[in-house]
Image (spheres, rainbow, N blue to C red):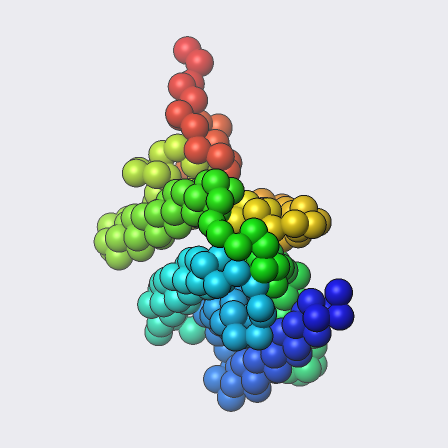
Length: 264
């Protein structure tokens, strides 16, 4: 228990130190939205720190760390490319206007500190899965988790690519993206990200006494659906794009499903 606790505490300290450094950088740039780029990278840092410190089964450590690195680097690169040259995200601009001159220090706690705590909590499955030395082999749960992770990763990556291509066309400005994966879910990228974390959890579930880290996929799914993802995003979209209301009526919010046909 002390061995695991020491890893948890060290990783929490590393995450908070990273977020503090990113906060300082955001003050220089006057752009709090850079935290979004470092979100995925934070999980990569936790995965590698745990890999170096934990004495768990090497095969599972490699599996968890490699999958996390692929997911985190892709997400960070995509957000960086998407946000490049567009200035601070409108969400952070609104908070900056709300808090005025106090935003520089308020953001340390409400943006960077909070995201650091959430990141560390969600990453518990990455840590626990690498700590246990048993089973000292890859089992069916590892394979199942890897398959679910792969489906989620592909879903998220393809959805992001489709949306990026759509927004790159000037004629599509103000229009609703309802093609490709977006014809089956209004937020297929969030659905894919949720699957990634359920896959990582199932890999961790192969180790004894790890059921409690279900908090990891549950928390990220809750955030994606009810807090920073679907709910927050659709509040602004409905007001700016009236046709989005029809999209809501015909298309599943999160879990992909066939479009609903309008009743005659």
